[in-house]
Image (cartoon, rainbow, N blue to C red; front, top):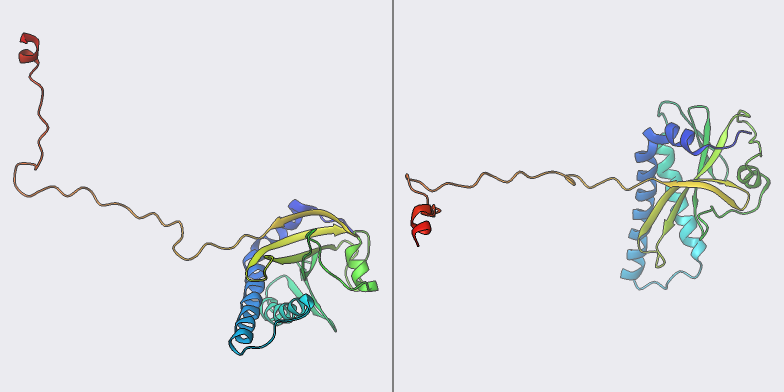
Length: 204
């Protein structure tokens, strides 16, 4: 199994960054809608943080499969409890909630251990496949999506990561030109700077 090289992975995934980020944002927005409805209907707070993880992942799966299904050079592999994306015959990726170390949280199965091991081979994928996680992180109060990262790992060790930035809002960064100063009508300006009388000043 090939090791993931940050620059190579970024070059392969670059054209898909907006889609990856959009999938996570849509899933997070759905979760926040559900959370607001719970408050509105006086439902008790959730007892287990993993419930949020499961709900967000369910939404990510629905939005992710719809987003990438049929995209050129992307294969979607739907499995019993998860799904994987295979980009350009080279990079295999999965979505995960990150922990404090920016690593995906997993139940220790043979399949998950093979994905986490940088040298592990994935059944059904070419031996040259590199593996990365699309990690999402929320703020401490679970009220805001904080980060969406592309992460390479080797077991419990973070090899590298980079962030998929939020796209600027429509119109952001637009330069608004200021109009030229309006000149008053007529021949004379409202304020005419006076030229000092050099001769008079010298005489004084």
